[in-house]
Length: 306
Image: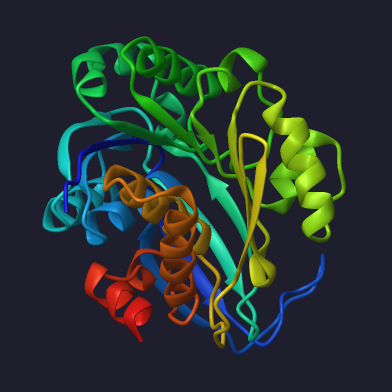
């Protein structure tokens, strides 16, 4: 297994989760929920997913100089991440996310970004040599967009493949997309980027084609319980979801992205990479929490074999 170096740039948060029978409507209070805290953030989730699944991962991020930030870094080191480029902002608290989860595993999330939003292009410039030495760069959008653009520009200039998960959803410049090797949107993000309402395989294909025409040759649209659509050049592949009893969908998309990155770093073809990512995400939704639900490589390999 020839795993190459992966750099992940993104957010790290502490997740505060309440699980209840259903999600409240505006103005409503619901009693009886179970509360717990977990480390989270899309960047950290994806970095840990990649590491647990066999990747050689450097994580670039920014925390506050507080208990949440110190606890996060300690955990990343225990997970085997290279944390040498995790910076501390002495004036801004670490990011937190408030997450509600219903009995079907669906969630809604509010993020207070904190120090994540002070990760700036100048910080990325300091890590240019590390980014340039990587084989793959994985990013999301819980940090400033100009920071994402700077990192993508450096990576593209150095010949490093950029995988971008455009979440939370927002419009992206064509100049950024032209530096992206692979884009992994969910159906809502694909709708924003394409202007096409995504409800099934055919609409996903139309959306993927529009997105691809902006400069990204490879697009993977994740469609939840339906599965994932892979567009590679002029070819489309429908990869169905693995059927499981979902408990909590938190971090499923992040696990998918981390798993895709690892699979590509190992030289898997893209269809097999999506299948590997699909199985990894399916295991995640059978457990509660963000990073606590991310599977190990041993778990995924066992599922794929059986």
